[in-house]
Length: 100
Image 1 (cartoon, rainbow, N blue to C red):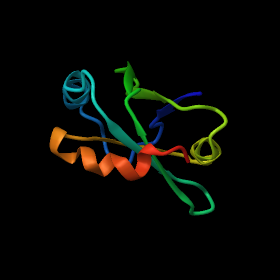
Image 2 (cartoon, one colour):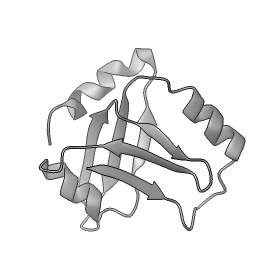
Image 3 (cartoon, rainbow, N blue to C red):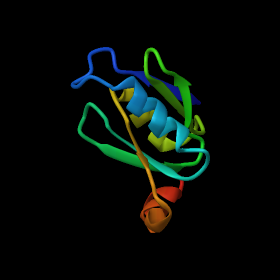
Image 4 (cartoon, one colour):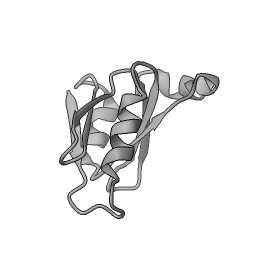
């Protein structure tokens, strides 16, 4: 499954230059994607499949296997967070690396 989210009513304005700079700095690496489903459940996964999709509107995408239990929670969520890890934060990805 490929998921993309658009901030149709953002809480804050997104600076296009900062967004472009952030995306440009992520050539490859690991990110933690997290979300809260409408019922309050939290889910997080480790991904290296993070990509920029569009600058206007600001869109990103990441991929997940459709049959994972976490996929339904992400699909039910209105938003997801993308947390790009620095090289000294890689141990943070371990709890999210297993299939959920």
